[in-house]
Image (cartoon, rainbow, N blue to C red):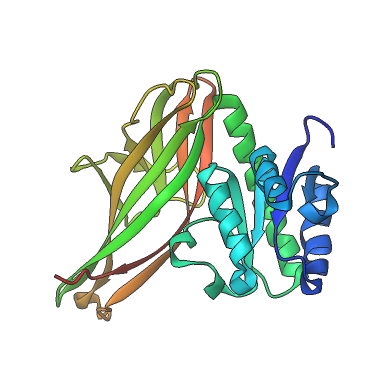
Length: 282
């Protein structure tokens, strides 16, 4: 593997049913993008297999994990990868295999190798862009938590979504200077930070209607430092006057974009959103 080549470490069961999924659904399309994808059973090593897996997770640029059948070893290894703040792409043949608290993480649901190939290429192109952003700015962006609550009356249903986004510099050099932060959404959403509504304007990115201004938690991340960006989003999900049904819960899913305006230029981080909004019992 060339020193500059991106390395994707693949976590999945080693059973025969996953052989073609790995070879033709992951490894081959990754190679076409200049990414080396490997499983631990392809490697030559002397240490114990668990030590080798942990070491490869630490060395990898990208983690690809098949969560199908809820294999406990894969789940444990994914937890370790998240603890190491790795770029993770989750995949499964059954959407119920993705735990509730990981559904906002990037994941692929596939029922054929062709579908997997198409989606893994899209996700790996996203990951390559994330790596490029990190290399330029020394800032890694990770959606750590997203949760929703429902405010419902007989007239309307309003969804409130809380975001927690980590900004991490785990390098030995200061990050680029953060001059501004923008969050992109559809037109129905309003954003709030520190109890105040965020100003917004028309989006300058296709596919989004609004660009909301957020105050950065810090203007520069020193080496080996971390900060968290917190804000709330609000949207009317249903109106009785419009003849819409008031439900007990709503699922909000899709993708948004967080832009850091930095001294190294504009850096866009695509966020995967998947949250169930429901009333909190008192």
